[in-house]
Structures are given as structure tokens and as C-alpha cells.
Image (cartoon, rainbow, N blue to C red; front, side, top):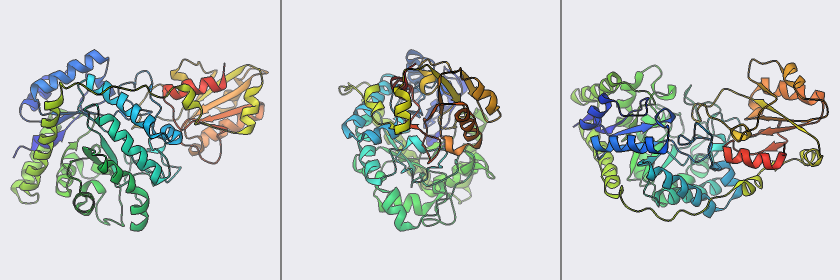
Length: 472
């Protein structure tokens, strides 16, 4: 038994460090890449080639969801529409085409596994971490597009990952920072949250990602990532999934707070997980500590060695499959939706439409909330597309100064994300409205206030579509 075989750490840098190369030669199961590993397509391919040269069975993964969460395009903003936009368009062929384009780019870069699609049903509009990463609020629609996305990306030889099992949509907390609880009863969970996972499994999804959430109706004792009833019971025995169960990053507080990553790794394996995503920055010493903890738990009998061997074989089987098809030709890649189709999915109030119909100058104002950890610090919306804001306001800014930046006679266009969740943003919007005509744009998941235009996404493509709507 080699504990390294089930570990998938992250690191910082554009080239493969010598210590990580040695871990790969020693049997490390995979590497998870992030924006800090992506400089250019050529550089990324050289990095993945180096990883596979050190261990041909290593699974190279990346968070490329094809929207706001985009590691390939985190430096410039994503050219893909994102799940919520695709759900609103509700054209499964368009969703499959976007996923195919994502898959083709990842295959060209030598990436084996994309940690996507997000198949959560976004049941709580206050959700701080899912939101526009979801295909929507209707389980049937989310299921339909989840299956299409899986089919599209896997047709290109890149494995998909349905996440976050058994459903992270009905939370108002971010598991990067806390341990959320989903209080729904079992009947609701089966009717609302599970259909997209079932559809993904029916589409042949290669992997499923766990969530660091408490679901008392399924397991009152442990988070889903560590839960035998949820992983071994519901996912394996109940739904019949035979692929690789991947953990969400174990450095997130929902998994490791109060116990540390090594203990979290042992618990995840015991619960039924196979491939352990450790995080984005895992130094050699930490990888060694995790491997040692797994070996010690097997030695003292607190972790079944057969369970670890089973997990390692599942990871190796995935690695072998990718090694065999790495040089195979991909399927043809269709065209994907453009700005015009995206613009058609926007919610635009009658008042906003009337204001935008007037021929008058626009003054763009930018609300800048703290970035979502899953999304990362990335250009977004019209600002990724080249718009210069007359003023930018964050949580500690002055709303009066923000409003004063609008020139006389101009139509104020205030653009933010999840405006209804931020009191400082609502105060700024009120201040701007107080000075004159204003159109408020929400590029996140809108609530029932502070959204004259709702775009349901903030990728660069969605920003282009917004520019077409608003004008300069």
C-alpha cells in the first residue's frame, strides 16, 4: 500500500519542482493545478508533460467550469458563458458544445480531469459560493444540463467531475470558511438535490466530488466528505457509482478546521473517498505528513488497508485510462454561444430598458466585493472586456464619493455581483440612485432587490453581452 497513490496536492509555480517530481516518481496519484500554475497554453502543456513523464498514471486536474470559475482564463476573464447562463438559455446542445470547447482546450493542454460541472441546485439565493456556478433552481433543468456538460467534455477525452455531492446549493455559508449545514429532510434531498447527480452518472461521469457540508438527514455525525452513509451508502450502494470519488480541497475549513489536513485525509478515505484533493498550496512536508498519517492509521487498525488499496486502484484505473487516450484524436468541436445569445438570457426590467433606450452618455460604476475563493481574483464582466469605471467601491468605501463620480447628465450604470448580499453595496446603490437616473446590474445570483439587469454570470463573454446591451 502506497498512501501517495491517493493524494492530489497543489503547488505554486509554472514549472514542476524537483521535490514534486520525486513524489510523482514515488507514486503520487495526481496534481491539482490552479491559476498560479497557468501562464500560457504552451507553458501549461510543458508542465503537464513533465508531470506525466514523472508518473504516466498521475491524474492532472484543474478547476475549469467554463464560466466565472476558470483557471485557464483567470488572468483575463473567461470566454465561456457559465452554467447559470446556459441554464437560462436551456439549450442542451449549446451546453454540450461549451463543454466540448472546454474539453478540447484542456486536452490540448494535457489536463486529464476537470473538476466540473457544478451540478448543485441553487436553492438558496443567499448562497455565497455556488450561485451562478449552478445551472439553476429547477432540478430537472439542472439535471438536463449536467448530463449535457458531462457528455461534451468527456467526448474530448477529458474526465468530468459532478460536484458537490450530495448537493451544496441549499446553504448560506461557504465551506471554504465554515462547515455549512443543509437542514432539508431526506425526501427533499432526494427530489431536489440528487437528480443532477443521477443524470451525471447516467451520462457516464468519471468522477464525483464530495462536499464539506453537514447533511443531518443523511448523516448526523460527519460532513459528507467523511460520511460512510453518504459516500459508501448513498453514492456507491444506492446510486451505483463505480468511478472515482474525489474530495473537495481538504485545506478548506469545512474539512480540516480543528483537525488538520492529515486527519481529514484519513477520515475521507474511511468514509469512502478515493482521490484526495489536498488544496492549492501543499508543500512537500505536508504531503509527507498526510501520507504518514494514512500509513499510521492503517498500521493501528483505525483505517482499513483494503479500503486504501481499493481507492488507490480506482485512481490508478483513471490514470491508466487517460494514459491510453492521451494521444488520441479528439472529436470535432462545435461553435459555442456568443454575446448575442447570452444577452437574450438577461433579466431586464421595463424601467431599465426605457432608461437604456435614451441616447445619453453612460457612467460605469463598479462595486467590488471580496472575491469568492472558488472564483479567485480574476477580471470580470465589462471590466474584463475593457470598460474603465468612473469609480470603484469596496466594502470600506464611501458611498457619497462613489455617487459623486457620475457626471451631470449621464446615466449611471452600477455593476456588482450578488448586490443583495452586501449592505455596503446597497448603501452605495441608494446613494447613486439619489443623484439621478440609474441602472443597477447584478452579475451574480440576484435577490429581490438591487438588480435592474440580472446577467447570472460575470465571465468576459457575459461582460461583452452586457456591453452590447448597455452601450458606451
